[in-house]
Amino acid sequence: MNNLTLPDKDYRTWLIDLSLRYKSSQLKAATFINKEMLKFYWSLGRDIVMMQAENKWGNKFLKRLSSDLKQVLPEIKGLSETNLGYSKRFFLLYNNLEIFTPQVEGEINNNIIHPQVEGEIPDSILWKIPWGHHKYIIDKFYNHPQKALFFVKKVIENNWSRNVLLNFLDTDLFERQGKAISNFSKTLPPPQGDLAQEITKDPYNFDFLSITENYREKELKDALEINIRNFLLELGQGFAYIGREYRIQIGDTEKFIDMLFYNLNLRCYVVIEIKTGKFESEYIGQLGTYITAVNHILKKDIDNPTLGLLICKNKDNVLAQYALESSIQPIGISEYELSKLYPTDIKSSLPSIEDIEKSLLNSK
Picture (cartoon, rainbow, N blue to C red):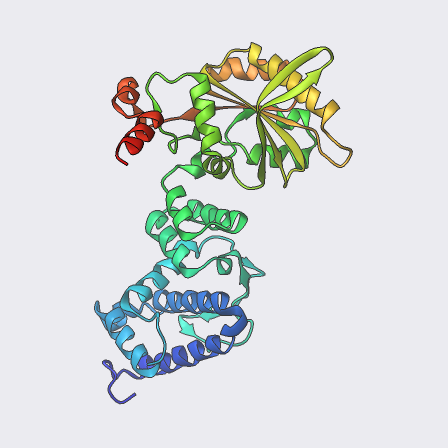
């Protein structure tokens, strides 16, 4: 402690408190390492802000603090100047949101930092995801706390890896979530209706597909089936794929559902119809028939009523709303987006599977 960069008494006292706090969190690391470390980073960021540390000890304060913490805690990683900066931003980002249950009063009084005691920082949703995930979210949404908290919840709900989170941070998911035009609030009881609305998006992002500019409906559906893993990821948590062109016998008539899913969270079947053109009101009658058939033929007593989701290239929102009011079946209507479209003649410039096989045989 004799070689600290700042001899200030308050600084030395706080540094000792930080080292004790860190060691206390390390004692709990065997079972609660992420939670305890995030609490430490939160409390550190809080201290820096509430003590106005950078004003008090200069603009190179974080670099000095990092150096001194490494001296008093030489065996500990994660005390870089960069991480200390993230701790400050971590606190500032979420400080004004209701994230604690319950909130503990009296932690900070007149800018005096009291020693941390067991249970002083209450539980929070923030402690449930890794620090690496937090840093990605902080980088993207430092000035948008509601968006940041939304993605924290999504990581928890879907158990996203860091790479999956990184991909979703650029998809406007916050703006799209729960935005489909639907009649769920009128056709389903409140709890299920609210949950059903929450699982929708508008628009759906199909950028993971590689199809030609003048694609047809079959090509789009083929591509979705081939990329079913990415499609499930875009649909969201709880969807299980049952089949495409799912055959269902209605009286003497054979019908085929575009795509049939089951949502494990809502405990219901979800019928998805995909149209490559503009929304037409007659689509609601077709989808409503499929929903009714699934309810009669597939649905069990333990299942909730079947949902319908119509995904089309574009829609007139007023027409869609009027069409939904005419249906007693729970239906949502959304658009989809595609950004990676290849020229129509690209297929002719590429060798077919047969050409490749012939080439391999001739080379033997």
